[in-house]
Length: 329
Ligand code: GTR
Image: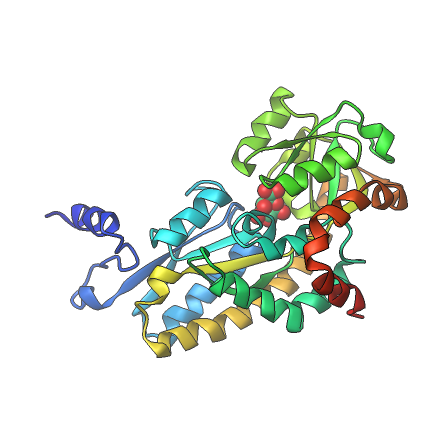
């Protein structure tokens, strides 16, 4: 068998975690596949790339991480599925995409559940954050090991025109992440929510299949959506953290020492990403403005009020958890 065929056969057998590398001690080396929807240099991607370098140094080159950025392995739904079967090892995804997998994390996907980004950070850094990582790891059907959180700022609506109050969204098709909760949130905000994979969004904006979308400033810049949608209205309806996960199937094949090393480096990656995030957010806002994007204030209390039915509907079964979040000062 040629090397390529060996890899293919391994992947087919669900053994893709261990990709033989070239060299005298080839059989001992492994290359883990990591993936992200964002390009190289984006804070989430950079944090995992740095983690890979540390891992390689700590294991004398025995383990390394190969990053597949920019949706090379598909959208987030596909990433989760590939991680679940062990076809890739590390996926960095939004909690938005995890909602359909582990229902409880949908609490973080509720509109206006966090007062601001500082509040969200307190929550993920504390016992609630730890508990949810644990549930994402041990919850039925998860088949993932949740390694840590990452920041993703605040999501605001962008389109060709300003959206300052719910009435402005009337008749507008706004792309939302693939989770019914988000579509209903947009409908409650006054627009028509359209569930769509992130990988389809740029062309959908370009061709007018949707009139707009919603996301944080770094995404608006890094995905070039700002070249089509020039008005960024500060609706602030969602503050959703991201997570990075490891394939449980691959994880179970690791030694206890390697697992401990990955956990340690994950904690460092989480901290590092936050610094990268803050710096990149400032840079993104400056570049967006320089690129002709207009930042517009919106009537947040009106959007808060309009989305109350969503918090009522989806939050009812997690009332205790929501209270703990609100009580986090
Ligand atoms: C971004 C996030 C991505 C993806 C995207 C989306 O903020 O970093 O992981 O979830 O939003 O809207 O699909």
